[in-house]
Length: 151
Image 1 (cartoon, one colour):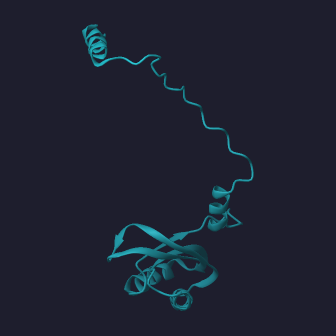
Image 2: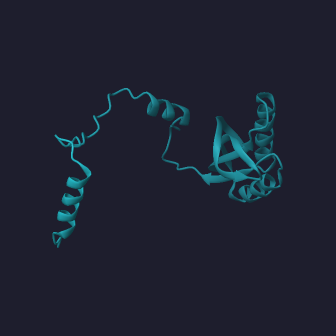
Image 3: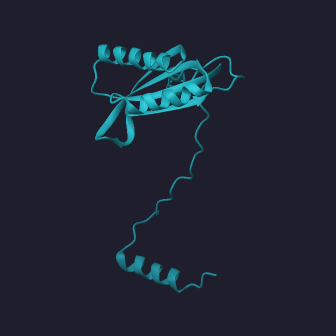
């Protein structure tokens, strides 16, 4: 049996209890297609890059499961027919990866890094003119600059 990942986007209109029921329904769809769910992760609500069926926000659900290659085609068909799922993606997992990094932990690390960040490169300060120029002096300087040949 091969190992796969399934990412589904569920509309954000559902409550927490309904989301739990929908995650169980998705796990049931995987089981009915011939797979065995190993892990389920709720990745939370996120704004979609573009509206899908007039929905702008979605709840992301990530499942890790084992199945035969023939079962994946059946699973794709069942998920495509489900009205509760906006989008889904099934990909095979790399067998060399033994520990799955938590996406939520990755976001937490980005927000609160343990090591101090490197200082941003300093830009040279913009030099302010020491004296205020009149409009006529500015016009003369501009004409001088424009008259010079820049090659």
